[in-house]
Length: 261
Image (spheres, rainbow, N blue to C red):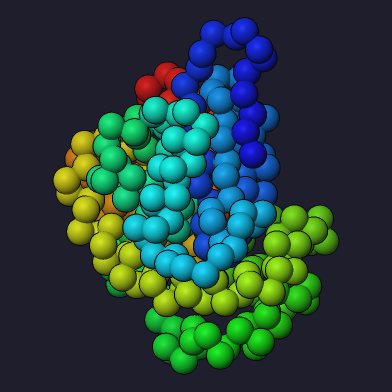
């Protein structure tokens, strides 16, 4: 989804919002209009997720990163501020390393970037043959319980949330692709962990301290490794501060991206 300025308006910076694993552009619902005063806000669904196409192929960190660069090319976006949550944060880090000229400032929200911070799932749980069983976990009751237990601290996972979360999983190809991505998450974390010290972009690290999905140490680790990065903790949030404390998050984004503070 894209929220741009009115026709004929003065060109504004672009803000690219990159969602995390299993979710979609729906996760940025509180940012699209709220931040459009200052930016052309773009929130794509990663290929294989949300309402994007699903096709046989590679869904590695490199492939997803190249998708984002191609997406920017298609919309004729030469450069953007990049804000990513979880897997989206890892992709923001990948972009800053692989195509530094395309990234202005970087915001990492409970980002996947700590080599030993990925949940240690038995390998058998993410094999392709697990798809029929995994599909059970996106049914309303199990999805509600799982998301509330692992991802969210500051909001209830209610029927209105599930109405935005569940529809993409009606496509039978969604779960096999998700399992393929899940198998690559440890390698993706190891890869971006190794890149942190070489980044030179102005970076804001946002960490929901109640995160039970990724290691709570991730934010501090990232902020220490990236030169001059700023760390802001959201103590009332879990894995998704932009959804759980949207007003505070949006004010912080304006301050960092507009005011430079």
